[in-house]
Amino acid sequence: MSRPVIVPTIMVAIAVVGLAGAFTTHRSDGRAQKLRDRAARDDSIRRQVAAQHDSEITQKHAASAPACPREPQDVSAWGAATQESFPVVVPVVPDFTTELDQRGDVGRLSFRGDDDESYAVSYGPRATSVADWPQYELVAECADLADVMPGTIQTAREKQGGSFTKVVLASYRLPDGNFVSFHGTTRDVNRQALLITAAHHMRLKR
Image (cartoon, rainbow, N blue to C red; front, side, top):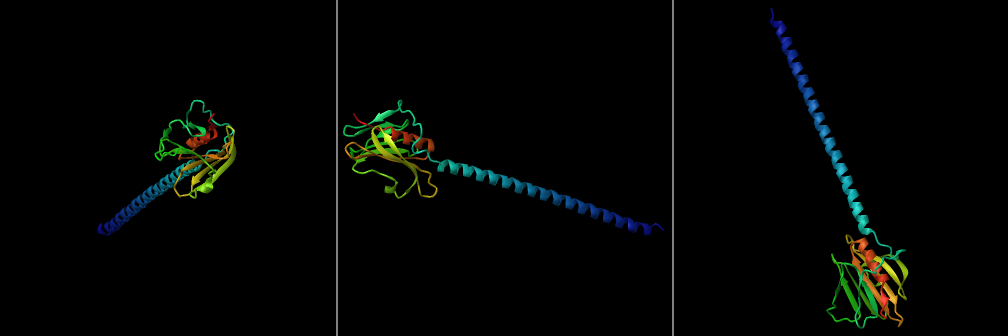
């Protein structure tokens, strides 16, 4: 007499197990979805941080020092260099060394710093400018006076993509009608400011 009761009980038990399994599967799927959502959010945050970092680096490297700062730096503690036949005295930027010109060019003084930083000063019958260097593009320029020599300072950068080289070009007219020209390169905007200072503080040899 008890058999008719057993079958429904088994069916109920199966149904309960099925519901429990479905609930467990649903809960497992929900947990997996939450993990995927969290991973996606974390990845998005990482991408945003990386993009901001890259943007800050790009802005830093793209920055250029003012061609003619309102208050040029004091160079009284800097060294200076010239040679017998050279018409000007050139400030030596700290951490730069004077290079001997292997070509024996008496119309040129060269200086080298770290990380391929360098600058050179030459004199001759014509001024130099960004127009002489097709790989450069002009950033800014201004009229300047170095000692008693009127001239122009230009800041520039290389046109090649990915290059962060910063350039300083300057030319000043000498009393005899010739020009003394400055050409410096660096990758650091603060060092570029030092190159501008060196150009501005060149003086006639007396």
